[in-house]
Length: 187
Ligand code: GAR
Image (tube, rainbow, N blue to C red; front, side, top):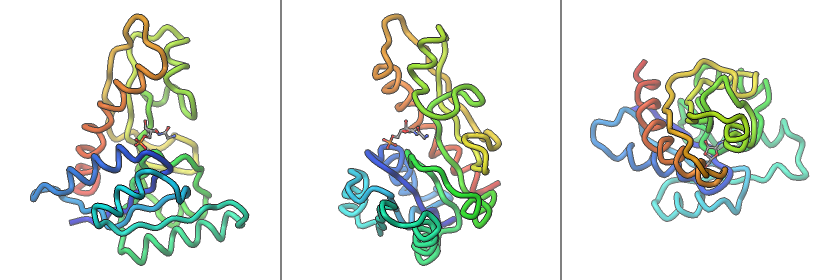
């Protein structure tokens, strides 16, 4: 099985979906570490309670290269071969991306290349779009810019606010990400 490290910053519901999927006997990946830039991330406590190794380091007050070198070391010590970003809300440096070239994937809550960056749901609603969704893509130096590996669409319904749409997209994320990660590690 391919050894996957997951990076989170918060709730961690996509990480939980990856862990749940990884427990199927025929899943081609296992989650070997969950790491976070936010020591208080709810997802970290959950991973710990599930017996999954965790690593947390706040980058506050540390030079970014030092912070990332520590993240990199924790991932390597856990034997990670691939990194799955799951609500990791920090930009990776060019150094980190090139150290893990073509081995980092991310889930983003829009139909890329539309709505890179933040506030994707509000932007889709404000634009009057009929359809929203999520994308799993390879991480490159360009924000939300790497090759798209898979997408899922959901309708935008009348009266949706950003929270309602986010909830519908999140449910789609939870089925898309495990499936695309399985394809990615067996590509
Ligand atoms: C998810 O919707 C994910 O797509 C998004 O944050 C949420 C994290 O939720 N990611 C980004 O916006 C990345 N820029 P989760 O912590 O419950 O998985």
